Image (cartoon, rainbow, N blue to C red; front, top):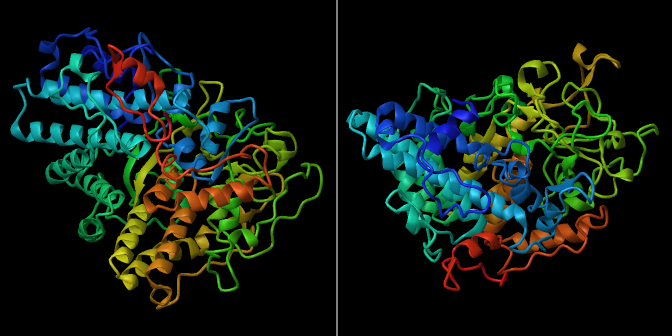
Length: 601
């Protein structure tokens, strides 16, 4: 289910949830165009709920008109490509130093509370909270719904509210909890001193207990999406026993909203192709639609519109979100097909950095995990069905010195289906590829982590090996083109690189012990979920962010210029600064209701 964005805005405007950029999202005056009497019907509530779903795409409603091409789109992208992937060291900002420099500060952890990206993310996610709350508030006044319909509306709204608060929690830790009982006039005075994990848990638990197992609209959440998200919350809280109990149920019984038993799809890339989305691996995905009739790309993942190859590429713009050399090196495998967990950067993948596209270059010939070439665009390797990546000609910075030689790949639409799944109604591309917030591989790896934390190393290895076995299937190799001039002509039977990957041998995790097994699981999450916005938040919850990211700065700074001077400070950089704009707006009589995070005062 993905509705036109303007419909969502109409619903939200009707209950006074539209505000301009000079107002706090916690201080919202009534601007209703429709009366409560109009909305307090089954159709009115459903329209409000639809608006709460629509806010998942991260588009901020800027007062009287949508901000359809402004920086809010990428500041609040639900993929978290800036806050999760770039801040997590698996990607550079990309482009060049003059374009969106605020991201460079986030990447280096030098950003302060005045950085506009934080305010853009804050107010956009709180808009989602407000939409969910409005649904619940109006629902309480509605009489023409059955008990079953009331329960369904409530469960969906509470799931969405929990999702938005989960985003806020992992970004800023202490944030104000605003629910449907808080009067609009009191919202701006709410303090951010309480721990909201219990509230998030309660919303997901209600959703899990009251949602159906399937939905008529695939985009609506179901019981198992709620169970998976609750288990994820438990993992962030280090409640491993509670998480394991849920994962046991999810893995044995879970189905998608459209009724497919949870399972890894055979082909890894099917999770990143609009033609094969909403498959058995889709636990909770934000539905994207291209060419929706609005003449904009607002429904086509506008938040990631910058993240396409640049130069003479077929995508026009904009050269952002370039995978790091550190990430590329992670896909190196040893003679047996296993990863180098401790010294992967000592086995660097050969790149074309500094080599012009009209000069000869031979790609790396060593052993590689095939997921590298579904995640990273690198020279001489097929870039989906667009032809071989040409290297420097698709990189914005001269000499590739600013952010390296690579291009993102998981967000790229196929050439063969671009007429259907690409959206070119703006100066940068949109795409119909769904954004996976939770997919089944993520569930399996979280389950493995919970099992390892509880000492069940054999079961942890079983879950990890399911993920590795999928990657090892030759269907997941990238193959050379059959035609040197027409990539749409198909592929040969010759792999494009020397792919070698195997599951861990029997007893390996037991021999590694708990700490070693966890290291392998953490590394597998890096390989499997790279460029999907998880990495920074994983590092923080594991307590390894300082060690991993400072090592990243030390290594990657010898290759590119953009992150030099970066440093992660323990006790400060685990969370981002509360936006100064929000602190200012919550100030009354010289006192703010919001307390800044440690280290940013």
